[in-house]
Length: 498
Image 1 (cartoon, one colour):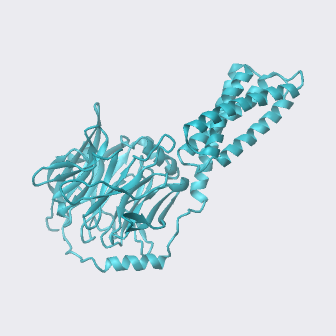
Image 2: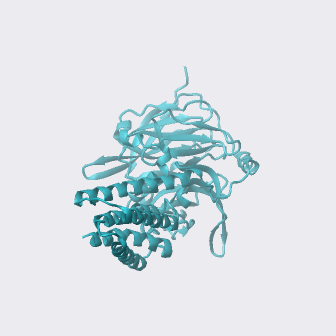
Image 3: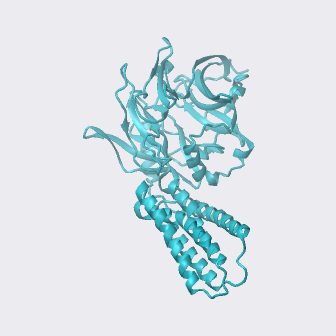
């Protein structure tokens, strides 16, 4: 029986070794699993030959159980938490060697089936904790491979963009809801032509999420990416409105399950002409958009086991689009970070830190000076943000996570974000909708009374019209038939202040 158990415990060791040696494909994994089982079986057999006659063979089975630690290590490598599996494989091999050395000197009863199961459970628990701790330390304390531009370089670029944006008059009022109108069933709205056209994602005919275009005046609805593979979601228009960036899972594989990438597609004309790929890293790349100057792609990068807000120059060449070397705009460490919105004057970047389930906190960051300020009080998690055309008004959609989600620390964002990408993060752990509007640098944003709208569901996006007098709010709620989305246009009124 101990030999059978040794073969079973050796299977994950072989899988981890195959990941370390040959990467992700089925044939090496199958060969590696069989080789790992046979090698551990051979190790148990040899240990039995060299052990004394009084040593119970159950000790060898317990030693072989250490091979189960390769299971969580392989899972961490599969999720991209631990780039490469070489070090994990080495650690498991060393632990197995120490365990067999102990078993050769062990005396007394080796224990029955229950003791063997307890050992296996303890190994899995300790292996999971060790893999998670190693991935967390890697994310928190290792140096990101992304280049970090100097503060002077950032400031020069931001001030150039800032100088080209005209300011609008101060509204001088406390905004209130005048009326609301349901536009369509969808999520993550983005506005074009002054709000006359709404881009959003919604299920296509086959159930996959796709980018759609709605012309408000005529009600004409067109699926823009239904001819493309994968789920395509979270469209964000470029500053000139001629194209949009969206994220897709079409490049994900069984061996890179969280490989979300960014695509760019034109918005002009009556028919879509196909999108072009922008990012190529196997980690999750999401929340993509162009910066206010239309020179840089900015996105949430999950490269190398850690998250950061990355930027890269976007230019055309050789019939396609080419990204320059990525730079780090905002680091996340062990937390997940994502860019929610960048103001048209480039002076305010809304940054989300935490995890996609709890959405712990959002900050307004001035890339030119590094100044930052929280945008919502504790407990009110920011889910989306949008600016008016003159950058003087910011609207954020807030929600509240369920108790279990709120208890997850931001330092676990690096793993929760990948699990959420794996499950497509439906947001069922978020409760209610709030909207706050105001200047990000003049104290706390004012709460907009939403009435019954607040209780309908949680927010999936917000898009402020250029003049700041109306917004489109995306909401989602769970029903017995599944998640239901809606896009609601909220007209605002501006009664003068007393």
